[in-house]
Length: 171
Image (cartoon, rainbow, N blue to C red; front, side, top):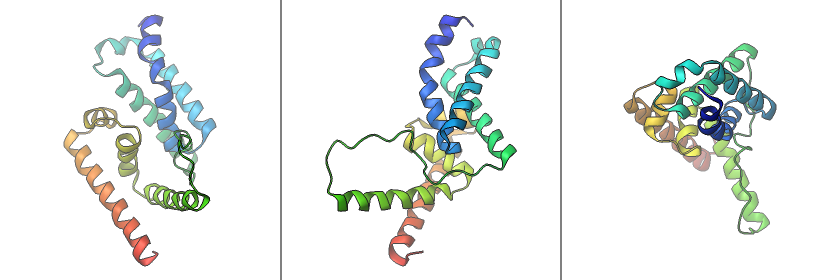
């Protein structure tokens, strides 16, 4: 792989790799380290790149594996804040009460998503937060596309049920 190909195909997905690593780790510094390690690993595996169909999915898989290795090696715990990396400022001014209520709801959603098994949490993040297609998720996780759909459905159903229980029963 030439430097030009690396700069044109890999470097543009760097921010997406960072956001993905951040969601898995919950720590900015660790996410930056993992992103850097992933880019170095991609550069080191230049000979494999010619046969790839989806460069972005391959880079995401490398990032995921490195982040999971870090989690396993340090018995790392994901922070309560799921997504500080992708937050966008609000375009409309909200009343303080509406903003506080939305913040409370989002905190509950984050807690419920963080409590999901790793497989469900990852699939929800890739589909609903990063907007990836089912095929891209299947490529990243190296599973069948039907498994992606089934696991995403189960994850969403679990989140919905837990949020309904919180709303109705306060559980």
